[in-house]
Image (cartoon, rainbow, N blue to C red):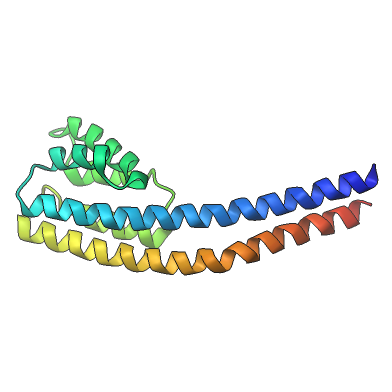
Length: 166
């Protein structure tokens, strides 16, 4: 019975480490998807498309990981007039599980929406794309290194807990 308990503790530790590694991978995919989606949004702004239509289109057919963000953003645009576009963007962005630098890059990309001319909006979106793409690449490298690290650390902690208890 003790052996089974020890085995379960080790497996629980391993599972915790694997889940942490998956979280890093999900965050990386989300950041990369947002970079792609901002590039698509940039194209829509360049064609002088209305932001609400572009957001709805991205919510339906944008990168899958970014659709929830754009759905929330598009839904929030119903309150346009009571709130500014940048406020609605900010509220939608803060719901995402992003690392602080990626969140800041996303927030910065949306600050000019609805406030400035097309050139300023395009420049802000371009900076956002560049920053998010760079951060996604850094997160990808961190996730690759973290997979083995977190799985091993989780297993080790589970084994240590089993040894201490038995």
